[in-house]
Length: 110
Length: 113
View (cartoon, each protein chain N blue to C red):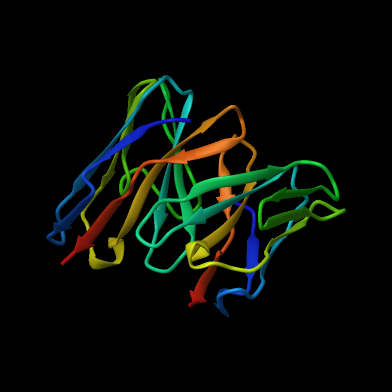
């Protein structure tokens, strides 16, 4: 499978601070997805990006897909304790499967 | 959305034994996917389960260790065979809807002692 790396691996922020996680693929991706996994839970789909340079927003979350379609970022503005969890990007394989990035674990300190 | 019922939710097993995990989907899907998530780690794809044909395994995973059944379009099982403590992990089944979104079962937390 492809290699999808994320940085940072862990991030601790004070509530109200911003947070960004970066995703880098070894290959060009047709699309990229983002998932959130709460502690003890299973991954939940957040969004899919398809177009080169695409930017999408969901309230305080901003998702970007790089021009070369090999990297992506998720930015959270003014974090809240409800944002706690691990954020994964995922890229498609050749047969409809998805390969998940290494993940970024976010801790929000009240 | 998709509803996936996965069981058992957790189990503690003796080394050398096998555990079969079941996933039931609320509607028909062509492919089902099995992932492993070791503590604090990402999800690693084990195999893709197709109805009516043998599962396709990812590098590092073999059928003898992780046999998969897919008897119909709504059901699949993954067996973890001859378990060792290294198999302690969370196992998740997944389906994709609309070629876009992956839905996951609740996961099976396996501890091998």
